Length: 92
Image 1 (tube, rainbow, N blue to C red):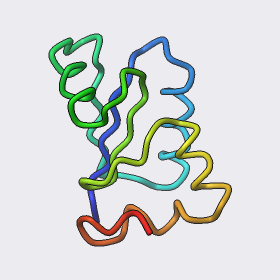
Image 2 (cartoon, one colour):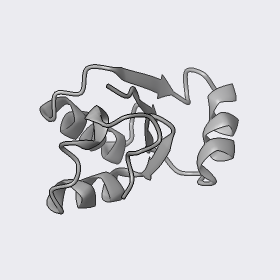
Image 3 (cartoon, rainbow, N blue to C red):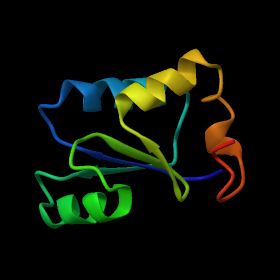
C-alpha cells in the first residue's frame, strides 16, 4: 500500500475536508505534514507540487492535487483503489 502524504495548515477547511475524506476511505498510511508547525516544509511542498496552496496530496509519488482534485477522484469512483496500487501507478 502506498503512503498518502498531505501538506496542510490547521485552520484550512479544505485541509480538514481532505483529511476527513481520506479517513472515511480507510487510509492508514498517512504522512500528515503541517506546514505551519514545520515552515521549511512549505518550500518542499511547492517544489514537489508546483503549487502554493494547501492541501497538497500525494499518493505514493503521484501528485493528486488539492481537495477539489481529491473530491473529483471520489466522485468519479477512482479514489478507492488509488492508495492500494503499486508505486507510481496512482494516475491513469
